[in-house]
Length: 337
Length: 268
Ligand SMILES: Cc1cc2nc3c(=O)[nH]c(=O)nc-3n(C[C@H](O)[C@H](O)[C@H](O)COP(=O)(O)OP(=O)(O)OC[C@H]3O[C@@H](n4cnc5c(N)ncnc54)[C@H](O)[C@@H]3O)c2cc1C
Ligand SMILES: Nc1ncnc2c1ncn2[C@@H]1O[C@H](COP(=O)(O)O)[C@@H](O)[C@H]1O
Image (cartoon, rainbow over the protein chains, first blue to last red):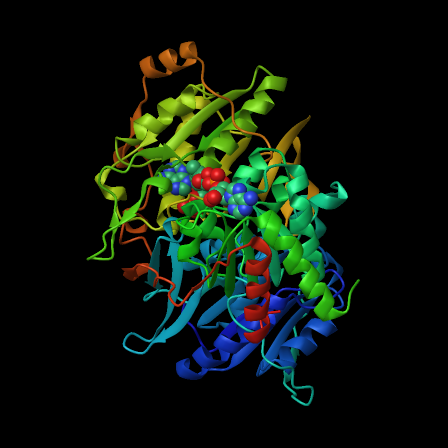
């Protein structure tokens, strides 16, 4: 399609309570830069139910305007409702570029939307730039489990769309005094056009629920923890740091911890501020899921373990000797007993 | 149930090496495997078949003739029939073009195998990691979809229940057939082949479907021409440097040294 505008859109994904997921505010930062270089506005797109809080987040984090589609059918994400609404908005307002957070919902919606628009989508980007020479967004993403990076352009189709990994960009400070134009678009999707039905949340055993993708601190255990009890010191460190527990596939396959904790190519891709790998060798499939972490601490007995190649702090030693002391020191510092 | 499973043959990423001078991927001599997520998708189909033996599972792959090996592997662990979609015209396709070709192939396969109730894909292929082809096939065909599925249950009367993984848990979704389901890693492993099933798979005929077999396919929408995304460059990620090593006489000393360093650097 022919873009009528030079605008860049950031999809502000909402939670069921109408607040915004983190990744939307994160993307407004690089979005602003590219929108300016494109010569267009930065527009936040909010789809949700009673989503005023998400609109506010978009305004406070730099959107020049916000387009809102609000209705009960958007409270719980469904492919049909969201793709239909997004398609409508794109047809009507014609942006040049769209950034979507690479969450489960974002990666469900992105390809369907781009396919309906017959345009290109670059998935799961970790770097964004504007290619001055060709006037396109330069989307950079890992491939082959993080062994290779590829920069991709979508030169002949508009809008150009990308999903961007949460946690890669920093969320800016909120400016409560900012104002922006709010465009309310009254658009609804009929119930019969939503072809999936949400039945229930499945209750997992308490320890099986973990939000690794959204976590700022992850302490992971691998085969080196030796058994299910070996996760105890891991959990204790995670708790004092306010983080969550991750695992390598070797630990998951041994049934020491639930699969929902697995980090890596066939597990979750994470980007926390701090990743502490304990008793993990650093196989390429594990690195694929965590090498984007800001700071990495590796604790391993074997100083030749490949995990040390990506570690900022390579700690050589026995995790069972090191973790309890470290946890105790941090507790002391924080005044926890 | 009449099920189609889309599988891709991918290089085994465990075996990938980087050329230290050219900073490119060395793919020569790297063994190929069935994309692991596609193995989970096939296992999902096989589990439906375990409960309802009248289920038929067809497996399709688009790729060069070597992909036959991957298809044979699938035939040994649950697939009943396999087809290879292959042709020079298809080379250079990005996900939009690939999904278009596969959706045309679905129509052709339905002439041969009957209408499919479920099309299973893997969540993503581990070479590109895009997770786009499944939802795009659904869009080309106009079908509903569930992504990140862990298991699918046949409820009868063209209804399915699908357990879907979320960032922070799971949910159960109802969906009607025909539909597309993309499968992520469940807690179980796919079944192993038996010697007998391996031998039968080796003997199986795998027909190839070429460009000319796909009636009505638009040549403008396949291959490089039909691909809106273009790779500008590839490079190896910069090796992290500046990492420090911490190792003292005892574990406790090491822990203390680490703690001091983390505090000094503002990490904790
Ligand atoms: C297709 C495919 C997909 C895969 N996907 C994933 C994935 O998503 N995630 C993943 O993690 N793996 C994945 N793997 C598996 C991966 O290749 C490795 O097998 C796995 O990551 C190894 O886990 P590990 O590091 O815990 O175990 P190991 O490689 O056995 O390493 C254990 C480490 O612990 C150290 N150690 C032992 N005892 C101690 C101690 N007391 N103190 C300190 N250190 C100790 C050892 O020195 C060793 O380095 C995949 C593999 C394939 C083929
Ligand atoms: N060439 C192909 N042939 C058959 N199926 C494919 C092909 N490419 C992708 N798929 C399917 O689409 C899924 C997602 O692939 P991708 O979008 O490349 O990550 C895979 O897990 C396969 O099920």
